[in-house]
Amino acid sequence: MPEQLVYAMEVFLNGLMAGVLYALVALGFVLIYKASGIFNYAQGVMALFAALTLVGIMEGQVPFAHLINAAFGTDIHHFGWHVPALLAILLTMVVMIGLAWLVNYFVFRHLVSQEPIILFMATIGLAYFLEGVGDIMWGADIKKLDVGLPQGINEAIDEFTFGVFDYGFFIDNLDIVATVIAALLVASLIIFAQYTKQGRAMRAVADDHQAALSVGISLNYIWVMVWSLAGFVALVAGIVWGTKSGVQFSLSLIALKALPVLMLGGFTSIPGAIVGGLIIGVGEKLFEFSIGPLIGGATENWFAYVLALLFLVFRPQGLFGEKIIERV
Amino acid sequence: MLDAAPTEENLLEVNNIEVIYNHVILVLKGVSLNVPKGGITALLGGNGAGKTTTLKSISNLLRSERGEVTKGSISYRGERIQDLAPSDLVKKGVIQVMEGRHCFEHLTVEENLLTGAYTRKASRGDIDADLQLVYSYFPRLKERRRSQAGYTSGGEQQMVAIGRALMSRPETILLDEPSMGLAPQLVEEIFNIVKSLNEKEGATFLLAEQNTNVALRFAHYGYILESGRVVMDGPAQSLRENPDVKEFYLGMSDEGRKSFRDVRSYRRRKRWLS
Image (cartoon, rainbow over all chains, first blue to last red; front, side):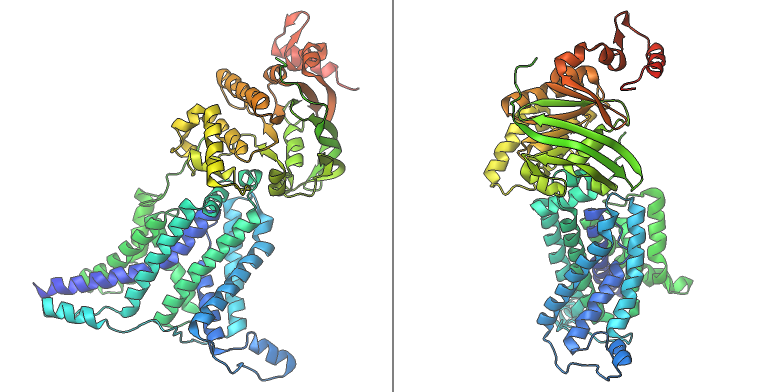
């Protein structure tokens, strides 16, 4: 087999893995969008916030330490304990549910039956607010997150491919784990949305607030549920991305990478988020590998957006998105 | 047409309510009405008379539109219901079918119907049985159960909306403008179903309608609203024969049917309660 083709295969596989990570973030968007008709700009920041909280709890950091120290002249930073990863994840989830409740109580409860664009603006506000709160609460320094997910080269694949192609592929264990997690997450979310009573109510709310109210669905309950789910997805994304590249502000910017994924897959489709993520992941890696050297590289920065632009022109609802139904 | 007789017992009593939107817009200026158990009560009147607002203040959907009942009282079975959430009212057996259908368009017809059973803690078997009951009243929905509601016709959507309400096993259905945008034949079909639901299932209806002619043929009792006030009420039969109702709402007078232009000019000279 020619060398170039083997390299391309490795790039392809790595692209798939990167795509899964994009899809993970995009999922959070799709979920909220499907369930409440809100495009949640804050999803990326929520992932950052979840990761920050997780690290903070694991390290036994005192929340709002700077604020407390400044106000009372104390000098405390740590409780001096370490919380095991699993317990910390559970506690973080509790925090995210609490956040969901607060978001609903202070913001969305008051915006029933408003235009989607108004709800969207509210999430922009939420994003900036949460970004600030995350900083004040846990500090702005770059943190390392290690919840015990395996990392580093996967020996088995390396050896296997070496045996076949005489060239060992470098596949990160973390990427493999992320893929498994994403698959499980998607499967359970689809089952939840399609086949359970609460999932059906959630989709009903997305279609029509007033009608949902009229059949006795409690919007408050559904919205807290939706935001908790978004918090959960954000937490999963935060764990995976945080482990990969450290917990820092730029984590919230992965949300921007999710946008082209959504345009490709369609805003309303869970499988679309996955396929869109994979296409972008593979596409940008292969493009960089094949065309990149000819035009000076760094194509990964813009490839996804150009692809999204093409989709907006020729297929605005995305690959799997629902056609826009308008009846008069 | 008055086969099913409403009973003496009043299920719903609305007593002199006043409704204000956005703290400034006074929409209802003292509306009182009674809905007897087992009857079809019609709420008639033109655009902006306050029919929908009356229904929404009963089902308490008003709050999500920034409306508020500022005076008067609403009670169901003698119990004050003004401060209950819509979901609590549905549990009590009062459900509203909103004007303009409001189906969940991305859900299938069957899923739409199932959302109606959201507040119930019934077993799967019970809910399936009710689903079959709804299909027996609306055979057309059974054919289309797997289609997305957004792609069904206006008449089918109205059926979905009514069927969805039935799934909550309601005692009282607040039906807002069921004839809106439907062909006369379909209007007749829908009203016939309402009538048989009333007779066979014993459902009580409070019906807001602009189509006075149809509504008075099917209802037992009627209230006529004009700019937020009840201007006239009575058994449907007597309202139908009332010369003013004929003149204003049925477009007829002793000299026979008038052209629309004449009706309007006449209306300017003669006013209710002036």
